[in-house]
Amino acid sequence: MLTNLNYILWFFTTLIVSFIGLYLLFYNKLSSLKVISKCKKISKENIKLLNISLAGKIGVGSISGIAISIIIG
Image (cartoon, rainbow, N blue to C red; front, side, top):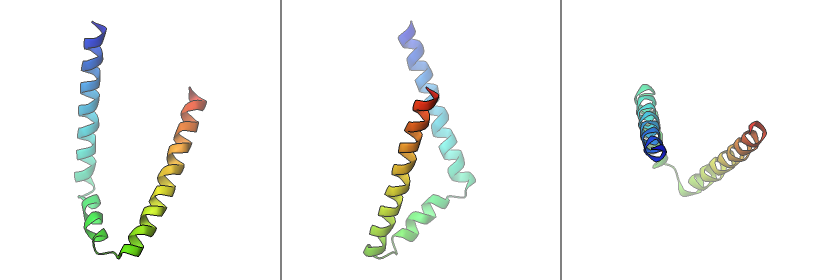
């Protein structure tokens, strides 16, 4: 009984997150796809710099997110 409820909840959660992602993609007028097309025109040296800066920002966000969840939990 509990496992069926678990599957149903995860199914609806996945659907909700997917639809919100699609909604925001179209709400922002496909801006993320435009950025990807512009990145193809960038030289290889600049792509390396872009990847390093994104990795730094994402890494800091992950670490701070874990710290906040530990504090809250």
